[in-house]
Image 1 (cartoon, helix red, strand yellow):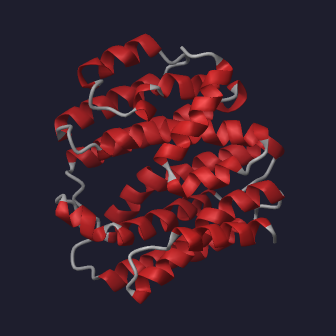
Image 2 (cartoon, one colour):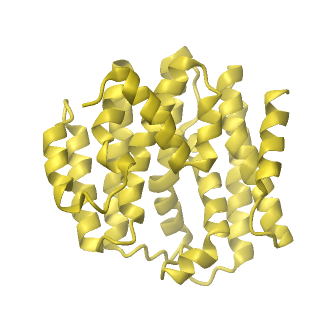
Length: 273
């Protein structure tokens, strides 16, 4: 395992390489939260890269995700067993996935079990959806899928806020916060997903139905924001939420996404509020 300062440096580098949405707000957090949210996000991203991998068969994904889910529930994460599990696929998997053990070790011990628990639940849910071939038939299916891939990020963040300074939030609103961001991603990536044979729209839904779903969850995310009184935490959540709102408007105009300049302008504006 890498030394602690080396892991911290690597964590921020890997974060920057893997997430446009969360790297900026994580980099603006105070040191304790930066370390905690950064390591927690990387744990979930490690799992996500298995689910999203285009070169792995559904059976392999299901096997890996189910096995990792169980490993994360163990009191101590067995890094040797994890390395052995991934060994046949090592050349195909990205660094963020191969180094899950590092991200867990980097997470503060007092909150580590919560992070492992949420990541385990996410991996189990992703394994189930892989077995279903991501076949979303109804809005209930969409709620279930978005809970596992994004709502659990909201739950995990809320656990971290409470651990950090006692901030209490509504679990359902925390889930809606994650769902709102995810539904904007679904709209933005619809064409790309379609090309790879994946469809996240329930049967019979048009694009406007998904816009309504996104707006409803973003409205609940605004309610979630009202329970955040720590300025640093508020800024962290406000950045991806504001970017999601702007992206939604851009998509409704027919634009593909926000420009990098627009993103930077939004972040600077929020930092100065």
